[in-house]
Image 1 (cartoon, helix red, strand yellow):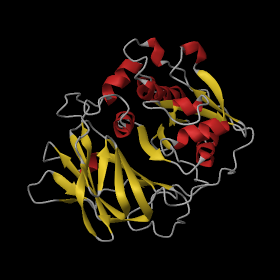
Image 2: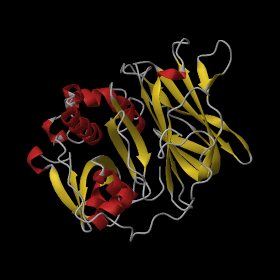
Image 3: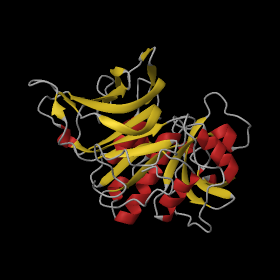
Length: 349
C-alpha cells in the first residue's frame, strides 16, 4: 500500500461493501508478466474486487509517449471471461494508433467506447496491456485506475453530509463556444483544459495551460467519434510530465466535497437537461462541467457550454445530484504528482 488511499493487489477485501462505487489505483507494475517470451503483451495478476461489480472504466497515464492497447479480462465466479478491449492509445492521432474498439458485444456484456457493461456481476479483474514496440514494458505507466460500479449495491444516502461553507475554487474559465467547430462538441476537452490550467497556475507550470483546440485534438477518438472518451481524456492530461489524472466514479456528493476541501476541483459528467431542470435525461444530452464549490443548497461550476462571460454558474444541489447520476457519478480528477488525495468519506478510494 503506497498511501492509505492507494490499494495494492490482494489488499482490497477488508473494505466495506456498502458503497456503489470503488476507485482502485494501480501504481505498482512489477507483478505484470510478459504473456510469452516474444510477446508485446503483459498481463497482471488477478485482482479480487472489493465488491461485485457490473460496470468497469479503465484509465491510464504514461511516462512517455507510446502506442498502447488496453485490454481488461473480467473473471467471474463461474469461470474465465473474454478479453475486452479498452482502446488503442497514442499521442499520435492516426486512427490506427488512437481509437476505441467497436463491435464488442456478446451474451456476457459489451463495451461502449470507454465502459464495460456486464450482464452479471463480476468478482475479479485481470489487465492486459499490449505495446506496438515489443521492447516496451509496463514501467512506462505512471498509474492505472479502475472505476467500479454496481447498481445492485445500495449507494450513499441522499441525506449525506455536504461541507458547510465549502471553499469555491477559482478555476480558470474556458468556453467551448469560443470555437465554432467545438461549440456543441467540446465540453469534455474544455473542462479538462480548465482543470489543467488550474494546476498550471498553482504549480508554476505554464505548459499545462493549453488551448482547447490542442486538448480536443489530443483526446479525439475516431472510433466513437468525438472528444468525450473518458480514458483518453485522462491519458492526455495524466501523461503530461508532473501531472496525473483519472476517470473514476464516486459514491456520492460527499466525495466531491472532500476533494474540493483539499483544493482539488473535478469535472463531472452530467445530463445537461436534468441539470437545467428537466425531469429526465434527453437523448445525446451528456455534458461535462467543472465543479468548483458546494454548499448545502447549491453547486458552483464552470460550465463550458455557454459564452465565456457566463461560464461561472450555480445550480441547485438536487438538480446536480440527479444530473450526475445519469453518468453513474463519473468524474475526471487531475492533480500534480506527489500531491496526496484526501480520504474518501464514503470509502470510495
